[in-house]
Length: 319
Image (cartoon, rainbow, N blue to C red; front, side, top):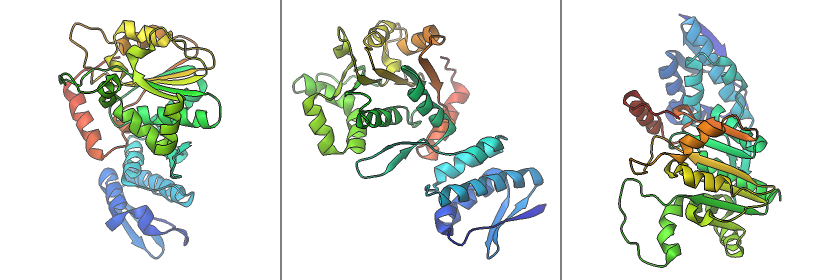
């Protein structure tokens, strides 16, 4: 067993890096099989040589991120430690979150994983992007953040969000109210994202003006969507015909992002998945990016990652 001391700048507040009751340090110890002690001289790390190098890389990156103003949470600690454990030390050392958008309350929205960073870059550089990945990877929220940012910078004049109205394995029956009342439950996740990013007042004002539109996929038929940022959410529940219809709505100076999770298809058994078929057909087309996010990109509670991994051991999903 060998030891190494990592110096800590006097300006750094240890509790914000090490976590409540040193929870972040405990996570690194558990994941990388090292012993970490905090002393007046800095952070003392002891363990096997290989694991010591991994822990050193992770801790130095966390200190650097904290010094730059980044919040060091358990999700970030686990992500970097798991990357290091897989031997991706260069990725850990080069990790830097990209700023995507600022919420109405001034909170910065950033890409939190390498996969999310690649996703954001793909949206910036392509006309159409397909994002496929499990729940909690930020597919929809980051797409909405990019749309809001493009709108604020006057790159587009409209934001259009749509999704197929398909029940998630349940039959909801006849919902009360007019047509808008009937489709609102399906659109709630999109409403929530827009409201958080733009603020409720601004969001509702732009909705009333028709600048922001949230509607079922069926409403897209026959339209040409120019100067717009268009997001198709829950695309795993589209048929091939619906997907082709949507993609051919894209007009001049428009960008489209299609998100979905092929492990949660709610279509009837005899229907093909439009998302899977589209990515197979369009993977070589210029201007189209296809991004696959994994459980490593999950930014919700760690239990979500463990659930996804458990399912992946017994299920076989292919794009």
